[in-house]
Image (cartoon, rainbow, N blue to C red; front, top):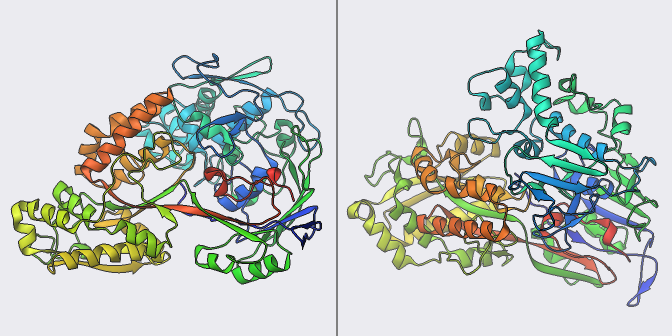
Length: 627
């Protein structure tokens, strides 16, 4: 899950003359963004700034096809597995990858199938807290109690026979190590650790130059999880090189010593040895990372020889560098976009849908004890009852209150789409013909009058909606809803207050907020990533809506969400996504406010750039660019 969005602005400059303008530094590409990066270890990183470096130096088995976030192309595999060519078998549980031959790592080693297996296993056992390992743990381990696991720790807990194994998230919580060490207390504990790894290892088979992955159950988004160039958790490392530099060596009997390390103890945090088009030349901590072209790259050398990523946290500095030609690319905050529009020699492209969505979520069962946000806690004009948003008429009334088009135009400068569900544009199954809500105060009044047999309209309501003070657009969205409610009926009162992120998050998790802003950016571009988070009874957001929603979801949403991950055939999955969208609309589960648009700002001499919504969030992919 990514809850932040980086808009990318790219300007390319060189020393040749194009359209009458001198190009500065034709052999070097300079990109400036806020930073700095966190790590060069693909198993560690789960932030867009680090991804910007990693996607230049490491590669994956497969990659996106140009601008598409649905279609895939080979990368370090020479095929994209499919049912049609017999490389997806056994009802979507067996994937066959033909590993590309003659591919060099930056140190001169040759890529092997063993490197592929090692890299995927290492991400799972690395499993640093808050990291991306869950995306591979889910498909590669057997389900426990009917649910996908998120960490190898849960598999160890299950091997030990512990009750509620899915409740465990750290090895230390299992009580199997000597105090202050990672040494198992006895042979039983050690064997449980080994058994957990062996469950992972049995998924992988090497036949000649093929890597065959046997999933314990179907997992339709699996290929997207493996796709590069930005899915660093599935990047391929050189096994021998990694072990030589004190990383895990691939053995089953000591993997836990390399599990969830402190960042300062990660031996691959500041070095790299990928197969990608660029190599790290030097790092100036906190300031810049310099890259140099890898001339033995299997697709041929990049057109630009050097690249430098500079970490500039003041936009004015980056703007001056851009104007002077000292920066070829900068990240531009939305509020500063007008400052680069109209600059001589700079093209601004807007209207680029991101793979992110914002909505206002309803809390179906609000925690009432000691909760100041629901007033009296009763339907008496001075509060709302805890199950207020369990009422479908109430939710539909609020859907018709929100000024969707006006909000996008005024708060977001028109740079967003109105979603019709969590299945947004760019995902398999998105259908713009499916319905959306529009502001319609007559319809809102109709549903408010139906709710509670007319008592709600007569008495009114009063509650508090909270926003994160770090995002003013959240405040504007909730204020727009409040203004519309009061305009419709003066007895409808929504007070808007801001909280620091930490307090806001705590109130959200404790179910105190009657409504809140829900945000999701794609971990991988598949409808399941969004549907699970927003709709499932166990979803990242929806699991916290209260028992009334959980009961509803278990009956209506869970079967479809499960089908979405268990069904491999794309057209069938699209039909399932359509059903979820329609159910969302019919049951008014969220007020979908916007799908933000990104933008690209480039000098007119830039060649080779294209927009891919999954890649653009990280920054430019230097290999495709020329001057």
